[in-house]
Image (cartoon, rainbow, N blue to C red; front, side, top):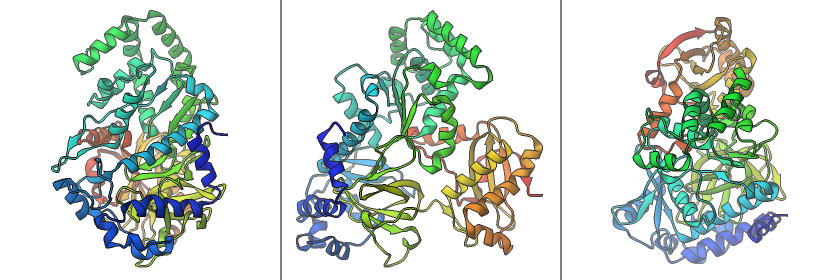
Length: 551
């Protein structure tokens, strides 16, 4: 039984998703927007059913709304996509160099806020001790919002919600203050985070991306002794480039703790080659929250030893700037129940998304094990919006599907009809690494830059591997791809695709690539690993130390 009334209403809506969906669409989305420009053009006032809506409004990607959004951005026009005023834009990266501007209305914020309330009600019902403890959530903050030429506030969604959290936090001040979260240099920020957190106690750690948590733990291991000295003496290393405000905060808050430093040194000596584990560093830690999609499983596996059996793991909400997709209600696993009652959802079978007249299903009509592209109507101006995410149905919660994110619809590669997906590549790399005992830090699979069509697996290794294991990798990877994608095996068997190769890249490659993204303005909390790319020139971005071909 969930504590909040909103959570109870959400669960009740799962019993009759058809009625819930119809109400969200007709009463909460179309009726309030019947007099906006888009509503008049598509006859919202005449639409009385889901089927009529589907006939009146086409499925579109962002480009289909771009001209309307541009008018709001450039001139501040209102009443175009919604009757409600557009109060801000969430900015997110698009498929081109130009960012996407996602309109945000009060109605949209209310829907997302309701989703957050439902999610945390579920979390705290299952983990009551976590509610009483302290929580780590803001590893980074992308800064102050700007203004569009039309005078409307714009910025990242993460920055907006971080501000909301600060404004509504009535108890203790957050452990990570805003100036620390806003340190631009990634190395300096993570060192400072480690310096602070090693003297704190908390029960929940939450980030969107598991790589963020893993990076923190790696910095603790890498800079253990300098961190211990700082803790002992109440300092922040002069090698760390931070503002005077940050230094003053550390000096005033952490005045020197020799006992903690001694305990940490003893723990490091006791841990030996296993390294410092999070569940020992923070005994009160009971819950770790982050995305747990199949694409991110390699990072989850690396985090498992840190958490052991004492720290539960829960997926964070499936969400994007455009809306909420899934709300996880249970620990473990990947994905969450489709958010019926929040937005209006449709699903197109993945293999039909490029057809002019694809099959379109409602939540109660999808099948377990099948993959779909999610179509979203969000109430803030995006109608039947192809968000570009491929999801898989893993089960049902009452009468509503549990969905998990697999990959972006475009994050596929097909040299000769094999149609590899990022999920398949990730699974094949994981299988091959496990088989050969390789400890993989990061990887990307890309078409070979020249020669007969084939794939190259670029791998960064955490520890040295034997020459025999590296030489065996291409064959193991080839077999694993065949297991995960039947068309791949067919193309290899017909000799239309050559055997894959392994190109080992130098240590630190993926940290550098991440830093390049953050330096270009990306929020490191939302940088997702690129495990599969169609870009054959990927080799130009990395330094290859050895190459291995199938025997």
